Image (cartoon, rainbow, N blue to C red):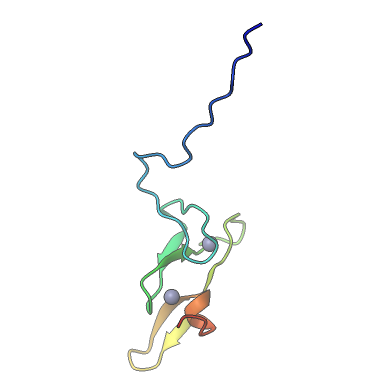
Length: 81
Ligand SMILES: [Zn+2]
Ligand SMILES: [Zn+2]
C-alpha cells in the first residue's frame, strides 16, 4: 500500500506581499497595521474594538508636532538598542 506522504506546503508564499509584525512576528493583514514613527517597523494596530488582531504598539503624542504618533511596543518601552 503506497501511503501518500503529505508534502508540507511552503509557508512562505512568494506571491504574498504581506509583511509580518515586528513585535509578535505574525502576519499583517495590510489593513489593521501601522508603522512605528521611531523605527519604521510595521506592527498590528486594531482599528475597531471588536477586532481580533493584537495591539502590538501604542499611541503616543509627539511633543514638537502636537500630533499623535504610533510607536511599536519595543520603542514605546525603550527595548530597542
Ligand atoms: Zn503583532
Ligand atoms: Zn518601533
